[in-house]
Length: 609
Image (cartoon, rainbow, N blue to C red; front, top):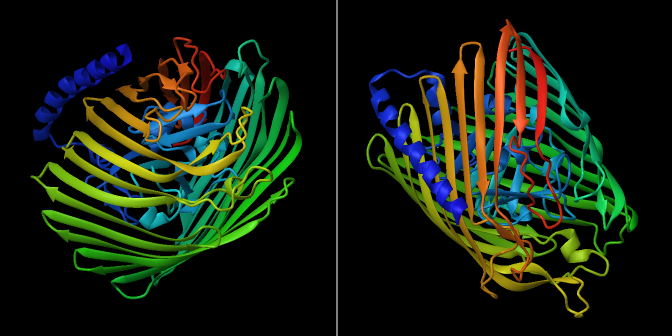
């Protein structure tokens, strides 16, 4: 209860201070970069560039400045406490982590990298912990269903990570060297540039740490990650464009397996090529061929195992503009393949889909309507749709209402894992209603949204033999998730403030209990200040209590974290940065018996713009 009270007071105080400053600032001409950061372009929400207020969706954009300023070790550190987002993990530094958007599970939200989906086909969800934030320049978090645009798994929302793109300019090098607590070492380097219509970006990074114990009294569990990225594109005189992307992360993480030491060698990889052609002045056509891999070789208490999954996708997308309106239509074909030491009854499945979306502008009204048909070899046919309506109350306020459906495809483990899978499972289906309003000013924004999601055929793992062990997944339950999200941000007089307050009520309708490992209350407050060549900042993240089990008997306490940061530009092109994570050395857990790292300090020196 205290967490909720303090969170509410903190956000209220932020709003009371920031709003008068923003109103006073309306007469001043703001810096263009400030306006862009407060109302950024978003492409994930509608398959087309739209400013945040025009997207008719609940969105959060974490831009390059935010990534550089906070310099997180993991995306889960950056996502924790963002509007509608909850994070659980089995320890720090490369340990199994889950991202929950609006109370859904890790495999009910979609992760994309430059438009390429990345997940484990066996487990069903992405391995967030193995992606180095320094390989990316931007993250978009879209909350709410997007099944009609992206197909399976986009129930809670979609996260898209964007890699840097070189610009037509002299080569721009960037180098970073640093380290800190737990014998951590971190290096990265990149080169970007372009000439004659060709743009390139090449980067590499290395992270190595002895880690910390994941259980009380346990030994340190290390983690290392080596990542590489190549992005290349060329634009012809006809405005046609071709390009390629290759991103690979490889390393090792140690963990605890029923009290015994264990480790996993992992690979996360995406690769793709695309071609975009202006058919006419109003029509553009884009074809993307891609492959994503999630590979792991694990030695644990059960022995040695291999789980390698590969997803190959061909996506054809066409955009037709007619006046202020826009139509997006296309088709998609994908195939999942599994190679494993476990003997699955099926090791491949394909999915065919067609989709269309209309983006209609009848100022002050806006309409977004979408429809998608999927035909999956494993679970059959699904039709999903979405409708969003927007109305500009005035020049600063936009009211929105939306309805959308989505589904989650059962994973290979749920369908076919030996002795566990159930091949007769249905896909989970959902329907979500949302009502929101956004205030967008020159130096301030705020966004308020309320929603309800009803999920049918929820897949849960049950004990059918009564021996205390989970032995099979079944479509046995329903879930109803209600929530309210309030976010705000301002940039005034060299101050940058961002705040988010989240309330979520994720209920298992069969039992009336809260869905496990979900906190109902969350707060995040980020404050940064520019002081000439110096910058200072901090984040306060608070989460309410949660239950670790479906019967709601194992309660995990809430927690509050304070992260601090400072930067110094000590010479042209040179800077130094200090970050202190969990500055108050809070011991906390989001999964039962798994503890996260205590206080950790990291120092780095950077060269480049």
